[in-house]
Image 1: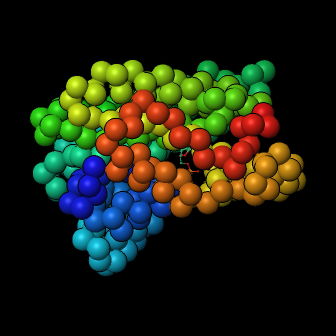
Image 2: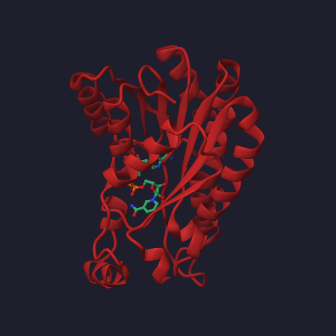
Length: 249
Ligand code: NAP
């Protein structure tokens, strides 16, 4: 898909990976919805940056908890109000509550599954009628190498991210006839607030397991997401961007 003038909804775009994706798509000339949950100021600052950068990109920040089906619907309704169509959906918003199974509470399980897995269905459910009517679209789901490999203390998160890979493939199969591509990206350890919460000593241990010897940057993932959108023949694929860590797990 050509990004110029295309309308993209990026969930969880106020910080981290989503922020870099929204910026990359704006730079490519897309009209971007910068979705956020609570970080209004960073989201509005990013929208302002995209509007001022040139290259034809435009942006608007919209608050919505995409783990809530009503909010996900409102997000798409407001996107239509602002830009009149939806061409691209990047399901990036995610969270983690890391505990080993003996400490993991029902609520910890539900909260992570609700946002990281169910939320991706809620947004697609609301965006799909528009994409179908328009004659095409591109969906990118942010999974994780943890969904492929598992990880100690992340049963809820790895279940959500693995579920997202199955969802991606089935959606790709069903929606190909509507000219909608659906792909997943599996980052390794990327430098954001999410990995910043890992104690320094543990981070050092992790880095020793990464063949590239460092965490990745949000821009590394943003480039992969842009590729998924621009390539019109790739669907049902999983892109691994992880510095080689998956080979060591
Ligand atoms: P992050 O720095 O913690 O940022 C999370 C983003 O999601 C923020 O913009 C946040 O908005 C938003 N968000 C949280 N809850 C939300 C909700 N209910 N509705 C809408 N937005 C919500 O995370 P990140 O590291 O950039 O991760 C982004 C995605 O990549 C996640 O799906 C994560 O699982 C995945 N991932 C990350 C890594 C990594 O190493 N960082 C690796 C593999 C996969 P507010 O600022 O408003 O709270």
